[in-house]
Image (cartoon, rainbow, N blue to C red; front, side):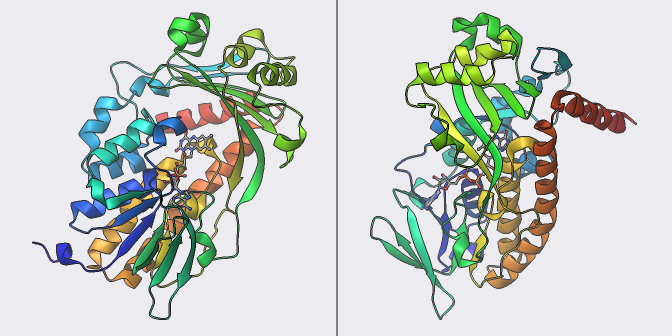
Length: 390
Ligand SMILES: Cc1cc2nc3c(=O)[nH]c(=O)nc-3n(C[C@H](O)[C@H](O)[C@H](O)COP(=O)(O)OP(=O)(O)OC[C@H]3O[C@@H](n4cnc5c(N)ncnc54)[C@H](O)[C@@H]3O)c2cc1C
């Protein structure tokens, strides 16, 4: 038995998303036991859907450290990197197709498949479902008391908030809260697109389609289960979902009203809304300020969206969540469970790399919803490619 496997420290991870699962798995690999407390009654990652691009220098590196890279490669969709960019008139600006002989650096995987991959490797008894954290209290002896909605109270030496944008751990560390970014995304799904709507399947191709204009956007993203996940994006007031008058639970009427908002857009682009099924999920996009830091606190820290939620327009969120998990896990191991030292090392390095990515994500959001977004984004991507080729 290694020294670390005899650890008596109670380590709680709140949240069983990609960040929390990765952290628990890497620590498990080093013989350090943790408990994940997840508010849902079972793993809901499949229902939360969405395809995620896993970056070579961050997400993939972490999957190697966690020992699941080979399995990831079996599931990864390298062709999912294909990217098409249009304006509202259907004019095409970019049509990037992945070379079938050369693997790219940012393959796609569905969120559900990624979480299952991590879960399959974990000791199941270390995840407690149906544990929604309501509040936590710092005790004088440096430990933290966790109060769950189901009435259970636990006391731990180390608490890691991996509970996403609306973290219930973050208030223990700071008064700063998430801010609405100005962007609202309406999520729709076109199921079995190849069978049900071959015209749209052909138009979208194997990866992502972005149509951007007039501070609005239509995004299509082919997922591994054959659906196209669609996001209709609008820069609107924070309370627009409540005040717009669109009955999101009556899909037929809601889609009519959505189509009216895109009335001067190309017909093929409007098919992303027309062909979508009956579930429409409105999502406000929130962010923490770029460069956000909290007050260092004995025995408590944050990873992933809880630490630095950013706009999804640089595709960094999940990569950062997993990278944080790896950095924190390795700091705990390096410091032989000396928690204060581990937190210090992790937070210092995390602030640095995550603020850089948060800035990129903020810039990307502004660019994607600028007046002539398609032109601007094409120019940016072309110059990025030229610099890479130099
Ligand atoms: C529309 C959209 C599209 C996106 N697209 C991309 C993309 O293409 N690429 C990318 O990299 N990122 C993308 N992201 C961001 C990405 O999904 C997140 O950055 C990532 O999931 C963060 O992982 P996490 O583990 O930190 O948090 P989460 O995935 O939010 O997981 C948090 C977990 O904590 C649980 N939880 C929450 N509150 C509590 C509580 N009180 N008690 C117990 N458990 C709790 C939740 O149920 C959940 O399981 C997108 C986000 C959105 C909204």
